[in-house]
Image 1 (cartoon, rainbow, N blue to C red):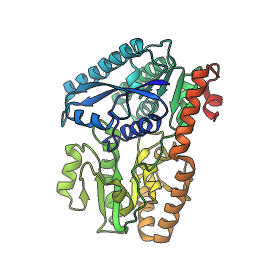
Image 2: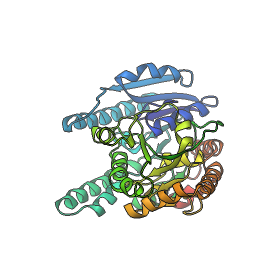
Image 3: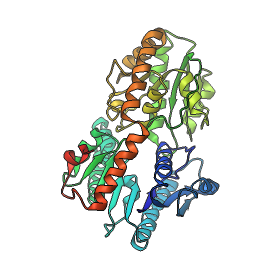
Image 4: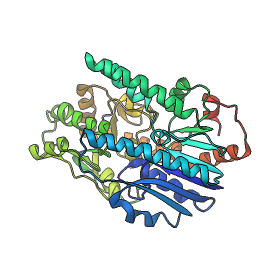
Length: 400
């Protein structure tokens, strides 16, 4: 098939963004069986990275935006305008490209993409209404009114977008069910993101006092909030039992409020983007994912589990992963319980090893690359054959 991928972020083997890494792997796996075309946004400095994509794609249609270390309000408005312009750019390609199938990555990408004669697949990555609704529930005072309006607008916009697509892919059954309530008439399927794409067979000694959080911070305020919450609310409680513990908040684009923590506290490290995440995951004694408002599949949790690293996360951090608390990882939602869970793992190496082994087995069974690609190819085949057009919601999501 002649397939156009439309990606809001540049697909890269060493991507700053977990979704960009995932889309790169999709292209790499599908290139031998299909004629792939790619439309992608990219920062001005990322043009050399297109070279690794050219062997995979028959044609690449880049759409650049200006690189900024830090964005003010006006810059964020410009960024939104760039999203809209890219969506219009992709819609023109779809209209004129004579494709057999189009797959759009991220809901935001599809703002101005209209229904065409070609089958349209939306890979949602995140269900945007869900975190907006949670922010509204947690807000107080005047902020609750603003958050409520934002949540209402997000729901209306997301519902209008997903209705234009023949199939919407979600990364977890939890997200698929949420989307089914939002737009019951939309046909959905769960195709989880593969885990541990950058892990190797190498082994590393555990650093007994190292706690790791790894995420992309640039344009992802939920990850910034998670790192700050752990550093400010949880870490001081952990230090009552382990004064020499070290917290590493690694990942692309840390903002000043994070880097300033590291300047003030020698026990906090904010190294920025790290090339060798394999070693980073495997050396950590504990991986934390204190997700406060998000949900869906948290890729960083899957990768830590795949590395055999014991994980402490929140209910939101586990909801899309579906790990069993107490067997595969630990779950806690307030600072005291979260700190207690971390202390348990630091103090009990047998428990940490047992959770790490169980988490690794879970990921190998549910989130292997071959299984993910097989599910995606099955969905393509059904769309190409015109099968199951009447399926919506849970039944479509559970097929295959």
